Image 1: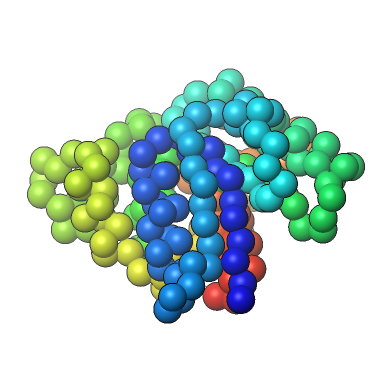
Image 2: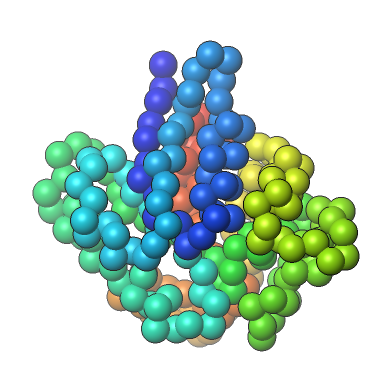
Length: 206
């Protein structure tokens, strides 16, 4: 029986609810395959967490370069430290960001979106359209978030991962910038798909 736990620090309610939904999608009859233990905060919370299983930080860019780079640096530094003293093979610390924000990640579950944007609310109307929501729906409202996730199936998650990979593949190397050893790009860009791809591969779903 395969079972794995992750400790995940999330930027907010959307990310927390998404991981809980994904755990349900991966659930087998009478068997919980994956558990995401979540909390809301920044990557710094990982410095006070001593669990010995994999960890991830889900966060947005939100046009805040300082906080964005700080989160990546913290994840990279802690992962390097973990590599030196980890007790079992495979223990990882992931940064799992969405640039500009998680709204774009939701869109990719249903269709391609490759246009750069200049505002944090630029995807709101697209999310409403893609998920058949009312024109004035508050996509940060818990009940509305649940309606969105009710329309996301496991194959949609796999498609979002593939679409994010295609976005990365279409980037020019000269347009990248480094944060520690990690190459990043201007929006649209992600690393959340790398974390979720590893989760699905570990479960035998990819």
